[in-house]
Amino acid sequence: MWEKQISSTCLYDGAILRVEKDEVELEDGSRSIREVVHNSGGVAVLAIDAQEQVILVKQFRYPSKEVLYELPGGKQEAGESIVEAGMRELREETGYTTRHPRYFGYLYPTVAYASEVIHLVLAEHAVFLKQELDEGETVEVVRMPLHEALRLIESNEIKDAKTIIALLKYRLLSDFYRNE
Image (cartoon, rainbow, N blue to C red; front, top):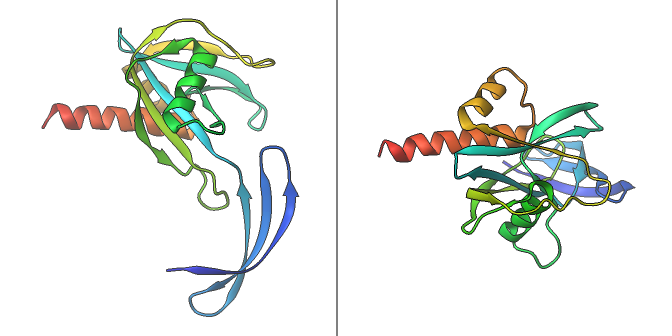
């Protein structure tokens, strides 16, 4: 399966995203239009402290017009590895860090119309140092047991896709490795 780009027109080029309208040729020779939102993607961190509490943030998100539970995270800066970016964002937003963070995979949050990739970092045995929020950033740090976070997914109180995926992946893999 494939689609070949014939032409591309930039419809919008802003500070954090670019929107393009592409004409593509399909496998059967017909043509179609694809509208694609491009951005640089980011990193999100699943942090779990020594008491096995998941560290989340609650913040108002303008597009959804509500306060959401999320994993801490943000953009990767030039020269940073994914893990370094994740640890910087974790420290800035929550004040937590860990000695042995590890890459935990990646996901495409909206495959139908966006090129965004979100990388996940796992930060087990996280410890609190000092929160260093960016100017204008307002977040509430929330700690809860994994089973409570899973209950919030079930009740649709956690709605953010990257957060749901990371929590369920962690739970699934924890059970898988425990049973091997």
